[in-house]
Image 1 (cartoon, chains in turn yellow, green):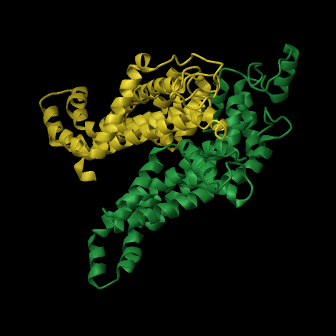
Image 2 (image 1 turned 30 degrees about the horizontal axis):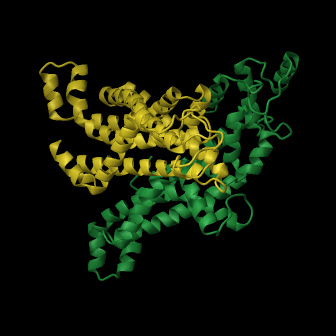
Image 3 (image 1 turned 120 degrees about the vertical axis):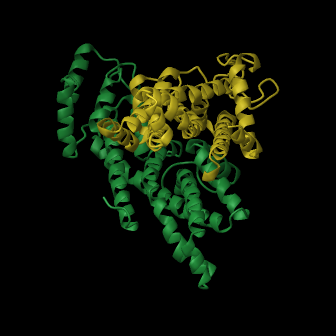
Amino acid sequence: MRDAIRRLRRNKLAMVGFVVVMILAFLAIFADFIAPYSYTKTNFGRLNEPPSRDYPLGTDQIGRDMLSRMIYGARVSMLVGLGAQVIVVALGVPIGAISGFFGGRTDLLLSRFIDVMYAFPRLLFVILVMSMLGAGLMNIFIAIGLTGWVGIARQTRAQVLAIKEKEFVDGARAMGAGLGRVLIKHVLPNALTPIVVAVTFGIPEAIFTEAALSFIGVGINPPTPSWGQMVGEGQQYLRSYWHLCVFPAIAIAVTMLAFTFFGDGVRDALDPKQK
Amino acid sequence: MALVTFLVMHATPGSPLDPVAEGANPLSPEAQQNLAAHYGLDKPLYQQFGIFLWNALHGDFGNSFIYKSRSVAEIISSTFPISLFLGTMAFALAVVGGLTLGILAATYQNRGWDYVSVSLATVGVAIPNFVLAVFMIILFSFMIPLFPTGGWGSWRTWVLPTVTLALGPMGIVARFTRASMLEVIRADYTRTARAKGLGERAVIFRHALKNAFIPIVTLLGPMFAAVGTGSFFVEAIFRVPGMGKFFVESMTGRDYPMIMAVVLTYGVFLTVMNLVVDLAYGFLDPRIRY
């Protein structure tokens, strides 16, 4: 583990990604203190203004400060990225572990189910679920969680299948440990690496999904700002008011890249053979 | 899959007759009743599904709730070819471009070309295509006015949507090709090929590429899905009158027949493509048996 952190630290790109993620997290947590205006405060005297001294990133269609909305947008992105992963892990790890560990008919049933879910185009399914639940932050967690666990379940199942054949598992069984105890105490901790890697890649995936949903208008409820929604609304006025769309677009791009670099770094650090 | 989609759609709170829905008129209760009967929405759910399935098998998806004069089958048959065309172009570009970048990166490992292609691949994979689309429009329509910002007509309108749609899958293909090629280049049979005095070009194309290609074929299935769902956003931004744009519009209007038909069309298409890819895989790699 200490080895892995050292390797991660030496990876410059991953550290850049990490720093950007930390800045975003800071913005998200302290948005209330950093943002110069409230994200709902409108100023109808100054609509669609380009960046100026009062409004560093300009104002939007109804005179709200773009910078403040961007800062609160970071909060939404980070919340979705992390919150959805909680559901993804809570569903995916147990299903994968049970499927791999108990085998037999349970495995057959669960892995068929996993295969079917895997074959369904992800984004299409998320959009369907969202249109059923309606827009809103909680519903985004649920929609991403319901569709996102499949990848982690597959990974976990594969790991558990390999680990349960190892001698130390037999040893634990021979010492009289029950099946549940063996699974939780002995097998799962050893299957952790690919799960951690899958989670680091799941975060940007969830952020992307939220942005995409908000972009087509089935994501976050207004007036809560979301980068995807800002890009979606702004792109209609791209020719006349470029700043409406460009800043949130850059924010999404930078966030996605930062998480990808960091994720790549984590993967290489935890599993140096795979490079 | 049809059943899942159908149930999900109908469990959705809000009916297309709801006056709050976009484009709906405030109607008297009697008129609503009549409309519901007309569209078959008054029958119990299982009956609606039975009717729907029966009709769908005959290629009849009913009438769109929003475009009242046009049947869904008409809309699909006029928009699907456009999406298919755009998708095929993007797909071809992604495969050709991705392979080229991947091969270049692997043959010049850790040199200029490698960095170019790896960073292009990372950008393509990491950045969502609707964000890319915005940058593309700004770069190639405003700053350097080469292509129009949207629409669908001459070849000039095709360029930006195709490139935007292709970049993501292209990145995936490039990454995979690079990894796969690097592995193959170090294999014994490649060394043998070199040892018997073959030129670099023959080694790469005749020996390495053929074997490196096998794992890449598995990517094609998910790629179809990526291009398919990606086209929703790209079509919406570049105002391409394809199926994806109609899908996004029917989503907000709760146009059940449209949504069902689009999801089914995509679903059937993707399933068939996955099957084709699976069969091709078995064909290319004789070690795999079913």
